[in-house]
Length: 143
Image (cartoon, rainbow, N blue to C red; front, side):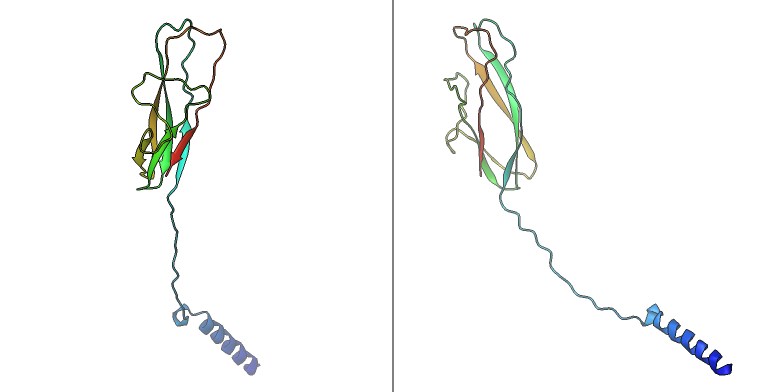
């Protein structure tokens, strides 16, 4: 019986030695973390340029809309607008187009969304028949 009791104590001491955190060893290493950001732009939003309900077109009808562009920080970019499917001349001061350096709006990305106001105008004219008139303008961001 005495030998069994000694074995139990030896086994208990061995278990305590293995579980002792003060005598545990560790190994460490390092690794690199990397992300490559490339120049990039997205069009976050566009809003309908709505001229409302009009009757006889005897005076200019002006309207505004907005669009938001987000480009990576320090990325130069240009916003262009085409003339839509039914282009016409306008009396506004700046006509947007798609020729970089001529009729686009230039900016530099900040990493945040940047808003732009778009102005439109329906000039006086022989009023067409009553209907809902629509067109589609394409926004192009060159970066």
